[in-house]
Amino acid sequence: MHELSIATDLVNTALRTANENNAKKVLAVTVEAGELAMVNPEQLEFMFDILIEDNMMKGAKLRIETVPAVGECPNCGYKGPIEDRFACSCPKCGMTLKITAGRDICLKNMELEI
Image (cartoon, rainbow, N blue to C red; front, side):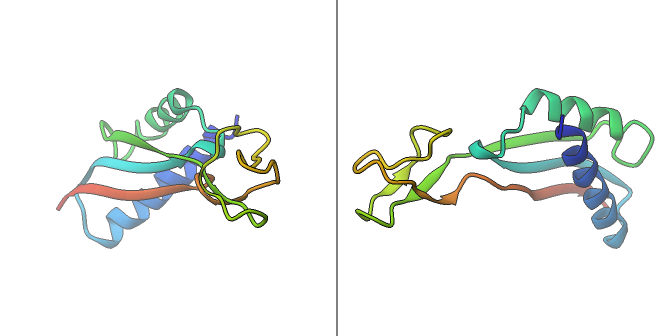
């Protein structure tokens, strides 16, 4: 269950950013999660909600935006969506794709009450 460590990092980053900007409260956090990051959105939201109970983030909304998996084939030049997330193979020639998007988790933005 790596969602707990991800939620912990998100909350710590959000709190640090809020404090650096003299915020009174964090209203919302938007996260981009790649399809290949293997994150369960419901579990992430559950962990996030538990971690914000006793700080300036209490009641903050977590918005999760899914980033599609995209790859590039070094063999035939295909660039596009990864259809088989487990094999990551090129739909044209079958070679392994170089992943160019969809495996990261990133805090995209925050709404603060100043």
